[in-house]
Image 1 (tube, rainbow, N blue to C red):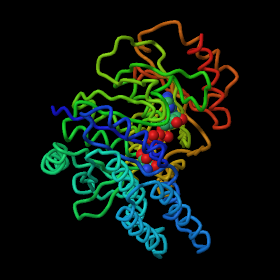
Image 2 (cartoon, rainbow, N blue to C red):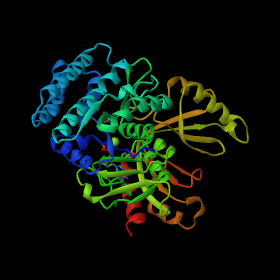
Image 3 (cartoon, protein in one colour):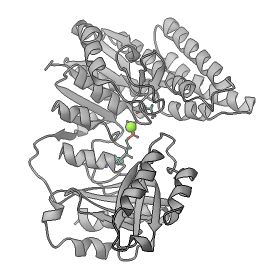
Image 4 (cartoon, helix red, strand yellow):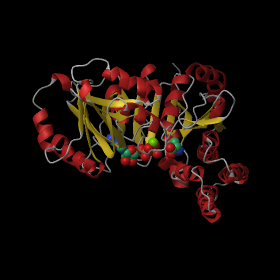
Amino acid sequence: MSSFNVAKFGGTSVANFEAMSRCAAIIEQNPNTKLIVSSACSGVTNLLVELANGVQDSAQRAEILTKLAAIHQAVLDKLEVADETAAEIVKILDTVTNLAEAASIQASTKLTDHLVACGELMSTHLLTQLMKERGLNAVRFDIRDVLKTDDNFGKAEPQLETIRQLAEQKLVPLCQNHVVVTQGFIGSDPEGNTTTLGRGGSDYSAALIAEAVQASGLEIWTDVPGIYTTDPRIAAKASPIPEISFSEASEMANFGAKILHPSTLIPALRHDIPVFVGSSKEPEKGGTWIRHQVESSPLFRALALRCNQTMVTLRSANMFHAYGFLAKVFEILAKHKVSVDLITTSEISVSLTLDQTDTSGGAPELPQAAKEELEQLCTVDVEQNLCLVALIGNNMSESKGYAKQVFSTLEDFNLRMICYGASPHNLCFLLHESVSRQAIQKLHTELFES
Ligand code: ADP
Ligand code: ASP
Ligand code: MG
């Protein structure tokens, strides 16, 4: 294991000159911090995604491009020596303009990835120059030379062994004498085309890089001082968790807690790299340590919310005491590449939710062809506008006496589906989206505030 520390800064942490300066101050505090993984400046990826979705009106397109230029120009204006960096930003903005105008942008996931990657390519130019001006021996590195993926544009899969070898050849030597600043979220396929790891993927990039260089620690700097008992934007009394296990934090990320990309902890867990989550705005407030061994494992740890759920209910009287029905259902789903997330079954029906397989953020769709084929077998109902509320904790399947408290708190809510038992770490409810935040607030008050 190297003594390198990898630090990742999210969009709000690199939103402007002042925010980037706070990042530099954090980096200066720890001489072992050798690798910096940066997101795009706050708001930039959203603007790029808007362009990638195809903006037909040229005035509207120009307005977005002006906004993008202004965000980066505001940082350039505060740098002492901005000419070279400004020239790089202009080049990238030209690429953005050309791609946004390309007739095929909407239809091409390859061009889309090239376009949305431009945010990180720009922010890292600015952050590197700012760090140099503070006296740090910073160097910008294009992570596409190391972070190799497949060509599943929009949600590319990293190729771990190649990444490890390239990191050893190219990144580790550079870290000996420099603080290396590189991009989160992006990579490249075997042909060198730019790919992305999915929205929020910079956390995952940082963890992959930490694994590849065998880092001693991974810091995720964001806009909140650690992982809270629930999203503090939903429950004002949510409180920070000083220490949490990998499995609890992974459950939280999987069940939608935006604080970490769901895949982030997999590389860290594989190499047992401790992860710290803190606020770049208020580093003095401390944060959360995610570790293998933790001192306490409370029954209730946190609540997470994941919206845009699609529930499919399949009903057939033929299912009654018959065998093979579920096998047929899953064969059809597999054939149409539909991935299932949660499932509950009864004698004559089965309800399941669909996995989010793309990065649009919208509710997943059951493909029409899959629906038609399922309809040969049973009735098919598809429901959307649902959210999943997950209560995350420890030893839930071995503990007694808490179900009454949980269910009486939710007695006024229409629970569309309940999942429990497969994991000792969670109890999940599917509810209509209009009441899901309220359900979290009530559960938080009842289970976490007394
Ligand atoms: P970054 O741009 O730094 O990656 P994100 O916006 O992706 O930041 O993630 C941070 C946000 O995650 C917080 O502002 C908060 O609203 C949200 N969040 C969701 N669940 C939690 C939680 N359990 N604890 C803390 N923050 C959470
Ligand atoms: N900039 C990318 C996004 O907004 C990746 C990230 O910030 O994690 O999704
Ligand atoms: Mg994020």
